[in-house]
Length: 479
Image (cartoon, rainbow, N blue to C red; front, side):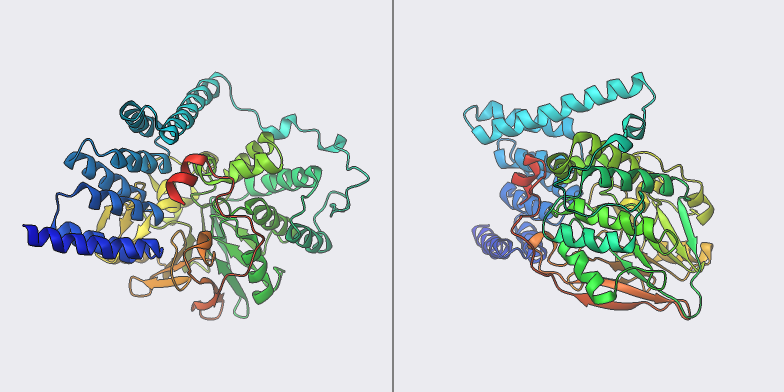
């Protein structure tokens, strides 16, 4: 046993080394090997839990933290890890319970006390929001805005809409203005939001487009508030236009600290080219995520809580999937927890809401592919993982060729799985300033719909750290 324990410790040390180097995949691999040798060590589970947290596998992180506590119920770090996992999943009451335990055991731990108070505030606020939501049918922020009477001060030198309309000149000026870390006048921001809400609310949940033989579209994955990398995409691939259409596949905001600049730029292009610029909702265009990962904090810091409310309303109208030439289906997350879902089912989704915990709308935003057949419990703790056989059956039933999705960091910026039938594209290079991954985008041409991959690397950005506006619990638990 001592010999085995020794081996396990060596494996743990190796894993710790990889963890320090931010190579979380290898860290997970060696923690797992240490656990094979010694499956009764709470520390190994707890360490692997933290590595899973760093790779956003919140479901696995939660399971490992729970296992650590089953082995040793006095292991304080286990409660911390489990609380962080539950916070990441928006399960605030469960997190609060674990923070309570830590505070009880360590009454003088300032950090624990602060986390407990912060979590308690969120739980109370959620209860209050639920109470008032059931009291009245929610009015739109738009009804309480008087944009016309907002004055643009004489000393404001930034871009302004022309007769209330977005133009290419305005877009170019705004992108430069943002690049210099300057703030768009709130009147212009509100004008864009109100107009884009109106435009999106008229779209179906499943957008269907046809590319002619000679046309191509560029599909981008997650951009996560990495504004300077977004500008780089436009530099490399050309600005959006009627002859250079784009589809951005969700997760525009959160984590990166220039989410406002990213989303306002994307919304501006949507207004400028409504039929040649497409946006789909990601799992981060939701209130729970925005509360934890920075977008809500960023909008409150740069503008107001009221403006965040309006963003929240707009996000609910983002379409959930897009079908190209009746052959390629694009969505942020992936396929479904059960067989038999059709394109007609997607057309019928009532999307103007926060996503439910299960069902097709949840799956479109949250699920992930896996290499083995069948389905399994999601590593994220939401939706499921689906195998090549699931993809095959879905495509066959709906007469499709392949699916394109995003939602996961890939070292090369993209990954082709399920015999070419399931493609992942991710467009936030060196994600969170620490993953070292490339970004990528895809060209699809009407003539053959064969994906062409283009990779790019991160560009420098001003010295504002990712997660600068995130909930303090996530900053400490995650970064």
